[in-house]
Image (cartoon, rainbow, N blue to C red; front, side):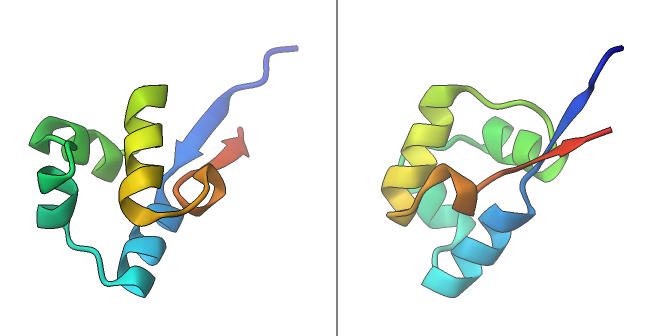
Length: 70
């Protein structure tokens, strides 16, 4: 049996909205446009990127990504 995990970044956009953080602020914090595009398309990101997002947003990984099983 193979379990496929999908990453969903809906919590990121909700957290950004709740905290009033813009995409521009993410870029200023070290998240590049290519990474933002990956987030929008639900692609994988590195743990370093996840850590940066947590630092910028002052939140936990659960407030950035959900893992769904397919």
